[in-house]
Length: 251
Figure (cartoon, rainbow, N blue to C red):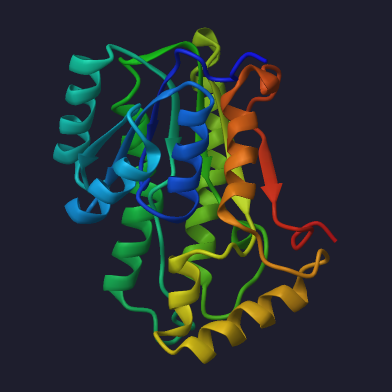
């Protein structure tokens, strides 16, 4: 059976752990040459080793335009083009209304909106016509979540970026879609509960009780959904939001 991304060049930001790393591994297994970014060199090196010989790591913070310039200069020099762009880097913290700080606002919107905007915009000269661009959203973008309003609002913004960019890029047939996971067993999720293992387990159990499928997701389950959006299997899907959430935001 032919591999779904044979000969393709893919760029994944935030590819050193969790869903980003799982997606990079799956892309590589499906024949892609994968460039991944991370902010910390040691974790980046470990991720490249885990992905395999078709991976290249570029140390970059997606909130810094100069780092994105350096990323794309490297991609241009070594691969010459981008077939698939997964703007995955992001994150957030929890504070209720009344405790929100300017620093939290700048950090959340910087990582989830500004970084996404310039990750995609700076990639445009390298994106081939007909490329696939995937943005990481969240069920939080359509649901109310206590103490998580800034993160939720930033992911709602990502959802509309995909709609608008689909129109901006229609002449080039570049498909822009959003993958919106529900709770997934990643380091970033469990650390919202702090470093205590019992508290982390309680958080996962509480989240699982709210999900119709009765459990949190695994990173590779999200990776398989991203692969669908990256490949020709989704050739007539554009401007869409694909939920991989166990039904959380659907019922």
